[in-house]
Amino acid sequence: MTAAAAPSELPDTSSEVPTRPNRKALMIKTVLCVVGAVVLIQMPLLMDRSTTQRLTQVLAIAVAVLGLNLLTGFNGQISVGHSAFMGIGAYATAIMMARHESPFILTMMVAMVVAFAVGVVVGLPALRIRGVYLALVTLALAAMFPQLVVRFSGLTGGSTGITLEDTQQVTTPQPVNDLFKSLTGSRLLDNQYRYYLALVVAVVCFVLVRNLVKSRVGRALIAIRDNETPAEVLGVNVGAYKVATFGVSAMLAAIGGSLFVMNADQAVPSEFGIQVSIELLTAVVVGGVATFVGPAVGALALVYVSDLFPKEHPEYAPVLFGLTLIVLMIISPGGIVGLAKQGWARLVRSRSA
Amino acid sequence: MALLEVDNISVRFGGIVALDGLSFTIEAGSICALIGPNGAGKTTLFNVVSRVYEPSAGHLRFSGLDLLELPPHQIPRAGVTRTFQNLALFPGLSVVENVMVGAHSHSKGGFAASPFRFPPVPSQEKELRAEAMAYLGQMHLAHLANRPCAGLPYGTMKRIELARAMASHPKLLMLDEPASGLTHSEVDELAGLIGALKDTHELSILLVEHHMAMVMSISEKVVVMDFGRKIAEGTPAEVQSNPAVIEAYLGTPLT
Ligand SMILES: Nc1ncnc2c1ncn2[C@@H]1O[C@H](COP(=O)(O)OP(=O)(O)O)[C@@H](O)[C@H]1O
Ligand SMILES: [Mg+2]
Image (cartoon, rainbow over all chains, first blue to last red; front, side):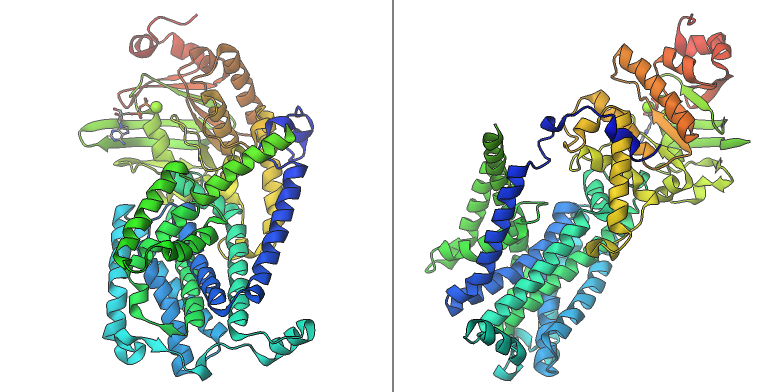
């Protein structure tokens, strides 16, 4: 059979295919993307220093959530150990920048390699065990990580952590500053530079994950999630794919951790404890499981929703967070992105009608 | 020479003997039907050939290969693909993406090449989609291509599974009750389609089916099973007049 033979003899049923975007939908999408890009680029120039830092933190967390969503949302594997992978990234960057004055990008690459290797090892049980047992392995990892940091305090600074000195921190490189000055007439502040650095890294990660999910590999990942035995019977090496996904997911979490330290100028073990894993999972769900924009939305919600809770009573925050999650799940099981998609479908339908 | 040789295969589940020394062969380019009452062990044989179940005894040879030496995911690359009696589509993928998963075993691009869309990933993606669309067109399903497969009628999902199996370029196609849930005219159409696929793709087919008119009209050979054992084998005419088969399965002789 030749590939081109069949489509020509098909009846025209384009009106029955709602998921193929019509021209108007494509236009709205393009406009949204352009507006989104402009907003993302302008943000640090319009906001104050602390807001910019907050947004950089959102970008760092978004990359980690992107990784967890790849694993949990698209491949159906649960991990409550991603705080540890974030921590590996954070400490790789903190240790290398504080002790060896390594360039940030190099520390991030080392973080990626280490986290991928640890992720593969932790993911190996996925070859034999499923579901809740794998979650237990990752739970152990999450519980162990802060203790390991304290145990090896010579390297990690123990429970007080590592703080980057002024000279060790990420600052705007001179050529970038010169270029920016020639374009805009003003200096590119360090916090603005860090925001753009995190934005570039996050966008690259987003595009790569999107390409992966929309490929042969991504279809196999979703097939494994939906129906494992038929996926294997159709030729997917289920074990290898699961382990590799674990590694890639851990790598993304580590990138998030590196960016986090680049922005915060410090790494403290208590910031990479098990509660962070729960928060990352919450962000996956709140943003929208198995969506592309979901992780960014979830990370934004994670950082900003906690601000809405009463500061005098921090002990209420988890309860309120849980309640918010439950209410959201009742309104929209697809998370915030799911809610937006419903609105979008209504918009497109009413416009083309 | 036989394409597939099932040689003395036995499968046990605890106390149940699902297959009890089953042997038969499928000739290259032929349609072989496997019939028998529910629980006879037909689906179990499919699961043995696709390496989901480990047989307690026996051999499986497929065009010179020992299939029992291969892990499950290498079976389609060896040339054997199946459909499932109880639907096994992927609800999170669209109809055309389901079919494209069928091409997994003969396509390229892993975790390194796919994120960067290194060649041949982009061009291959186009080809796989076009080919999947062609199979869907052949099954009159092209208009559903971008729909999620969840919620489609049973018969439609069965045809999507057939398209998905074809996308793996099989030499041996194993169909587990493909006509169940179809109307009479749809069954006739399916029989025609199976015949056409077999001729254009030089397929051999192992067909498990309860729809006797279809089985008898398109098969060269019929293997009859009961309680995990082969009770008869022969041409459709021979099998239909075999008293043991009539007693165990057919009830009254078919005319
Ligand atoms: N995974 C399994 N565990 C236990 N028993 C099974 C399993 N699969 C099949 N069986 C048993 O094996 C026998 C054959 O089943 P099956 O191959 O599905 O029959 P058929 O497809 O001919 O209707 C039945 O008794 C069935 O209950
Ligand atoms: Mg069966």
